[in-house]
Every structure is written in structure tokens, then in C-alpha cells.
Image (cartoon, rainbow over all chains, first blue to last red; front, side, top):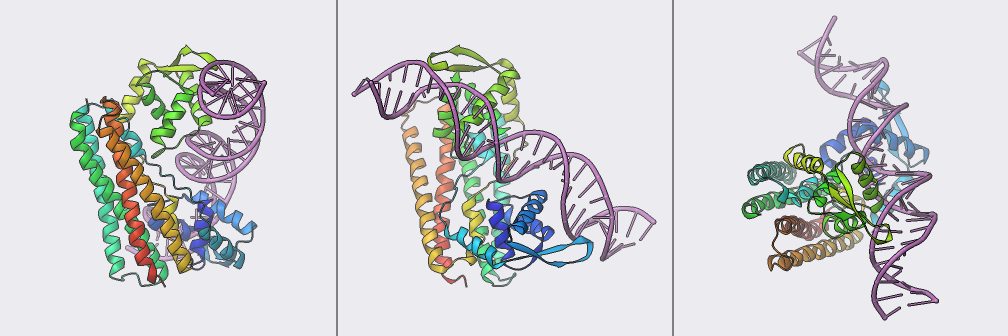
Length: 176
Length: 176
DNA sequence: ACGGGCATGTAAGCGGTTACATGATTCG
DNA sequence: CGAATCATGTAACCGCTTACATGCCCGT
């Protein structure tokens, strides 16, 4: 369901093709919600059937641009207004941490170092994107400002995870 | 796949029934990886077929206790050693934040307040569980110490999200 | 006696991934 | 001309959720 509303919300910015939407997911939304292209194309077909979007243009290479309909805009705004939010987080990294006692101490140290490296790198990426947005490199539209908030969450989340990995590395020295 | 290894790892602590495992997921692992009981029962059947676990006891009310086999223990340790980790995080809360520009300013303020309340509450819960574990209320085994690390991650993650929600609330005042 | 929790499962359906498949266009 | 990228889709499969279904045991 989330993907459906995400596509509608992206189309609320203006017309785009399945390919465009796929790219936007990869570039901007993969932090918090990855989506593959077959899933996107499938959902777009369903949205057309339900008349929440429509084909507004056909370009070269069979490119089809979709636009949101007034009903579609209503539906996505309704979704944003509703407060039934599934707040579950899924993280394989943290799931594994529950079972660290099964690992050899040296393997665990290596593992946590790798985790730290990954997290700090991600945090760095989002901090830089955030800084670029603060310098208004992408413009100053409400959409950009919203994206700035999402990026900030990414930066803070991955910073917290990096600090945790460092802390856990110290703690893990006497697990047994 | 992750669930499969999680079940094996839990059974590495000692025999348990499907019901027990379901409870443990709900109590301790739902922070980072929720699992429903039909999924757990299904996976347990497959693990028996693959001879990674076996029924070691049958109690009242059709209760079946499973124990891990040596092969099973090997498989789960191998999983922990491998470093092909899917580090994607999925968060509907943050996904929504990308589309905040579509919301009415007052609705958005209300929404972010609710988000803050949820996150701070969660953070509080994990901080308290962490503190209890530090007072050794559950004992001092390697398993408890591992769980302590996971709980700490939960506390840090939700604290970061709460701080973000507060920050976003201020920022969101001039989105348009 | 009965209500609540223990305990296990099945079935349908959905959301999501991976692999397969095809062809057009642009650029060097 | 050929490689990379644009662009769209299908099919099989898996993981996971929701709803349904059943019955036993324990405490009050």
C-alpha cells in the first residue's frame, strides 16, 4: 500500500514515467523504502485502472508519462492525513546483534568494524546531501524542503547506528 | 531467510516450542524484526525437514519442543560469519516525511507531535529495559549481554528519531 | 463451570524480488 | 557500428500477513 501512495505523491509533483519514478525511488527514497521496477510498473497499471492516474503523454521508446487525476490527489492527501502508520522498523544488522554471543570474539570485532564503516559512510553521504540542499543547490521548493527533512532523518539514523557500533565494539570485548 | 537463521539462533540457547519462539520474537525481537506465528510454525516445519532442528520433547496440549542439531548449529554460525548483510531499513514514518509538502501546515504539526510522542515513548521503554539489564536483573549470560546490545540500538535509534521529529517540527513551519 | 491463555496449525492473498525478455535511441 | 542507457513489461517464486480453525489445560 505504501508504494501506491508514494507513487501518487511523486506524481503530485508533476507527470513522470515509470522509468522516472523508478529512478527517483533509487536516488531519493531507497534510504527508507526501496522499490524495484517491476513492482512500480505493476502498481502504475493498477493506479490507471482505478483512475487515480492517467497517461498524459507518450514519448520515444514507448515512454509513457503518467499524471495524477483529481481523485488521485484526493486519495494521497487522505493517506497523509490518516494516522494509521505502521511504525515497524526492520534491520538485519540489529537482528544479528541479538545473536552476537554465538560468534567468535575476533569475528565479532571484525564484523562490528565493518558495520561501523558502513554506517559512518552512509551518514556522511546524507550529511553532504543535506548540506548541499541547505546551500539551495537544488532550489527552494516545498518539495526540496520536504526531501531535506527525510535526508536529515537518514543522517541522524545512520550517525546513531555508527555510534552504537563503536559502543558495541567496546562492550563486546567481554561478552563471555 | 533471516527468520530461518533467527529461529536457529534462538534454539541454540536451548530447546523451545513454536509458541515459545513466537513469544520471544514478540518480546525481544519485534523491535528489529517482527514475525507472526504462522510464519514461525511454517519455517519450523521446513527446518525439521532439512534436519537443522528436531523435535526433542512433546508436552501437554500438543506442545512440541524443538532442539537444534549439530548441522543446524553449523549453519547458523556460518550465517553469522558471512558478511552479506542486507542493510536496507524500511520506515513508513520517514517515507511519509518525503511528502510532507502535500500536507496542510497545521496537520503536519499535529502529525509530527504524534510521531515525537511515539518515538520518545519507545526510546524510554528501551532505556528502561537496558537499565534493568545493567542491574543484572535477568542474569549475566552472554545471551543477555547480546540482547543488551540490541536494546541499546533500539534506544539510540528511537532517541534519534524523536530528536529528528522535534527538529522537523521547527523546520516544517516554513515549508511553503 | 467457564474464561483466558496455551498451543498448533491451514488457506488465501498480497507485497516484493529475481530472472527473463524485448526493443528503441543516443552517443562516441 | 557497437555499447550504454532508455524504457517497458511478464512470470515464477518467496516471504509475510490476515483470517480462519481447533482444541486443551489451568486457575478462580
